[in-house]
Image (cartoon, rainbow, N blue to C red; front, side, top):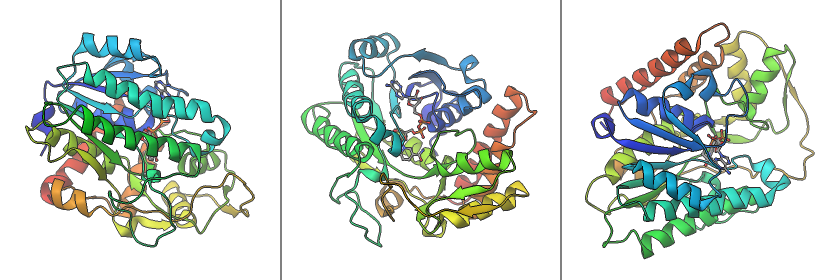
Length: 357
Ligand SMILES: NC(=O)c1ccc[n+]([C@@H]2O[C@H](COP(=O)([O-])OP(=O)(O)OC[C@H]3O[C@@H](n4cnc5c(N)ncnc54)[C@H](O)[C@@H]3O)[C@@H](O)[C@H]2O)c1
């Protein structure tokens, strides 16, 4: 297990106020890590970061990652051992609306983080989060491998594919055999879990409808997506980060972290399961009439992570949705209680990892 590696380590998370970054901060805190977060402020009072009172538990700096000099100063003053880079403009539809921000944040922001790592001697490991959408989508029915061609028809996907090329180039040019810093990229997709209130994401949209007793409107009911609870890719990032701390280049480069094929179900099936766990609700299917549509089926082949990292997904579809709905139903709970609920889920997840390594 990786918990001992993180104890007392200094870790920077970019994007700590976001959905995945806030969960990662909780997981690291539970292992005794000294966490510093760098990002923009949280967007809503119900974001996981706010719900869990993370501002009182970690050192957080409001900083735009597009400002390289500021970023470098923070890195040089804090001297982190490990960096998890998650900050991004993370919504596909917003990428169409604001390509400049999307490329600026995702591509140049990532180059700024890589450059800040390069100039901070203390950094032993960096895990850079991209996405499953970095692959050129050829509508294959089988999973995409790390060696498959990168691409992206929309600005978000293309900006992330560009990050992958920059990471590979930094590994080749700077973090090579002469360097003691190890960098990897992590590709995952369709992550779900409590405290995500982003617009235009299926689960927050479902929960917002259920809270108002309104029907869940689904535009693409038959689209199959590989749903995974947020703890699944995070366990992969953490395992990868711990292995990158060793004196070998074996774990650098790209890694896919996807769910098991049993978690590949349609948007409609997901909505039905959410309703079952919520207790009531109904669905209304509307035909897709959006010129900015998302790509069809794309899923990841995770053989590399399973074989070389000894990582694998642990939660089946039923547990994934049941964990998630518990995490959304937190009205009336205090920040400390919500934080403890998240930690309990992490402990249950880790017990599962220990029992079924
Ligand atoms: N959630 C998913 O399903 C999913 C799927 C695939 C990949 N990813 C990737 O995982 C990472 C985290 O995603 P998420 O769902 O937590 O996203 P999110 O939108 O919830 O959080 C984004 C974070 O990035 C920060 N950020 C945005 N622009 C910034 C800027 N210019 N400077 C500093 N910080 C900035 C925000 O403040 C926030 O903390 C992203 O890189 C995203 O592309 C997410």
